Image 1 (spheres, rainbow, N blue to C red):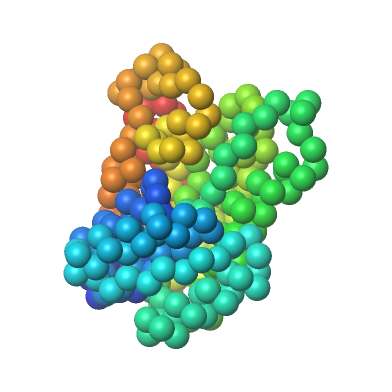
Image 2 (tube, rainbow, N blue to C red):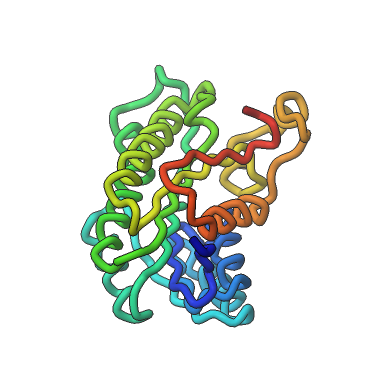
Amino acid sequence: MEAYTIKGRVVLVTGASRGIGRAIALEAARRGASAVAINYRSGATEAGEVARLVEEAGARALTYRADVSSWSQAKAMVDSVARELGGIDVVVNNAGILRPKPFREMEPGDWEEMFRVHVFGSMNVARAAIDHMETGVIVNISSVLALRPEEEASHYSAAKAALVAWSMALARELAPSIRVFTVLPGGVDTRMARAWGSMDWVEEQVPLARLAKPWEVAKLVLDAVENPYITGDILTISGGLL
């Protein structure tokens, strides 16, 4: 089977106004995507800047504000993107939040929010998207914390682990026409990661002794999209942390 190429495809990236999502949107444009849809929940200015850079790279850009944890908003976004751009070929579910907190201090709402964004958000977008995809690829961005849970992030780790399990099941259900896989980054140099606090642990625990750059994660994501034998797989990029 020939490689699946990004060139000429319509790519939707959630949580794409900054960080990993931004890097994926830009890398898709550089690889010749015909259009890139940039989802954001807040940060319209940042999303607009991503759109400008996508267009400079030669792809059409479309920004769309939506909270993917809401089924109605996610469906409206996906339907609008498909209508405006003529379909959807690749979906990258990247939208996420990180709310470190000791388990003793967590309320039910903390768990509910984490699962709504990471699990239900990805499910909402994927469910809406497959109605517009005869073939294509769905990528779910999880985290190494799904396999290597950390203190004060039990709700995050659990949600990211659920995302992995669901992705594996969905890959079996949608094969061979639609491929589904997860990418599990370790520490990545993003605003969200640095908001957690001190980065002293990086040099102590990561053999490469640094955080990943968002573009390094983006390259892995799109290399895997273009590999036609990847589905149901769990791909890690952790600098040796795992």
